[in-house]
Image 1 (cartoon, one colour):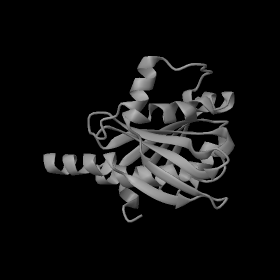
Image 2 (spheres, rainbow, N blue to C red; image 1 turned 45 degrees about the vertical axis):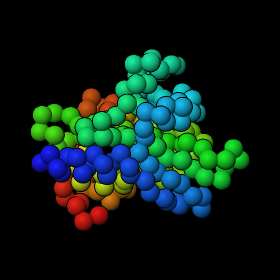
Image 3 (spheres, one colour; image 1 turned 135 degrees about the horizontal axis):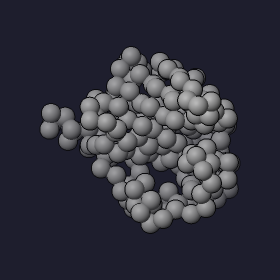
Image 4 (cartoon, rainbow, N blue to C red; image 1 turned 180 degrees about the horizontal axis):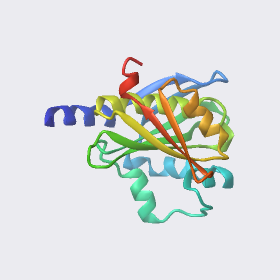
Length: 190
């Protein structure tokens, strides 16, 4: 078990993949590291108020140092994050999105996932790509299920989950929030 955990951690910490997004531009998805703090902050600073509300379920103007540390200091066993960097923008390479999972519960086979995509780059399939790559890493770590909580009015994120190709279960809680469960174990061949 220890060998599997160490090999997964190495895989997750060195993870990188190149993709093409809907508008034809190149995108690199790679592991987010502590030294990427400025890149993470760049994505955060380019989220509009609605995107922040959808991600954190409340308006948020600033991140505390402890929150930034939580989002950027990862163990790549129970807490994994990927950053998406779009190439050939007018400003050069631009960090445009973050996706992460964090293991929840004692069984270690369920992880909560969340995404944040820079407003300028929404609708290009970047969230779906992050989900695909997080699922690949999660499966290798023995995670059988992702869970996400999505505000009912966040149609874009619901569409990402509904169209990702992974078996999904949805439950509406209090008419305000969807609890989404993605069964990675039922989708192991993807």
